[in-house]
Length: 419
Image 1 (cartoon, one colour):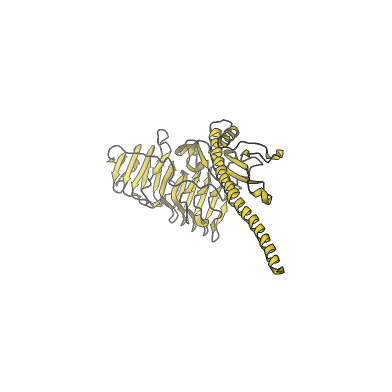
Image 2 (image 1 turned 45 degrees about the vertical axis):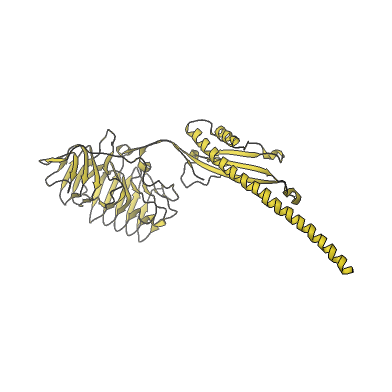
């Protein structure tokens, strides 16, 4: 009889604990669901608010007011949660990323003044959880946007050597006994892999007025190379550039190119270019379907010319002498040699120490190779932009780049959600 009474008492205790557990589970499912829903809504509000702020910044308007207004329209009205009221709906913080209170976590080298962060801290009242001592749940979300200003200038900030491939090795490679000196510009590797920038052998790479920039966190160094950026550094974690590049040029040709004596006149041409005996190009656009080939001892000059490699490769012998310059006016001012995305042929660009190149060499899908024995390109005022760029062998390249002589890239202001 006494044991039965004790069993009844134990059952009552178990029921009470079960009820508490059920209330807790109910609190978890209902209040937890409300908190999750609020967090999702708060994140959406933060995303749209920071985009509104970035757009206002580009328009030179008050970006803080724009963010607060958009957050309020999504139900997150800024209040002060430090005032002691548990009924505060939200606290909305808006910072430019150079503010000490911001925590934007941007890539190294990013201009913090161009980025905005919105942080929303919201309080969600609970209905069942107060039974277990939880009266409200706090969510904190954040979003960062890039208010990217418009840009008119050379591609990729005016870097002299640019490898565009986004992954994999040897976007930019220096090997063998290659010698490179660059003035007024630097080097950029767009690959996210550590082997994307590969420096090896006994190469000597020097950049006097800018550094070496790369998307990856590190680079590959083998052998006994010499690298000197004179204080500008080898800078990792740079923002990756889109591929294919936006706003590529589209030069076209009128008529058929033809030869008259040692002169070549602009137009479309199929076959090995230039034809035998041609030593000078008249001004204009040349659209080539074939190989642009210069043999040892061959000379070629041309001012105000654009060479479009619609298909085929480039193969310049290291003893060939070139004097080529891009137009200085018009839609293609500064564009010397261009290969569209459809052309993936290897472009071997060598030449003698007397060769002169002025203008952008833009081949976004093609590998560019400067190599050969005693190949010298020492009067180069060009950007070399390829899917990959390799300097190898005993090549000796000197680039003294004037940004105003390069093709100018026009990009309107843009707004981009970073995170």
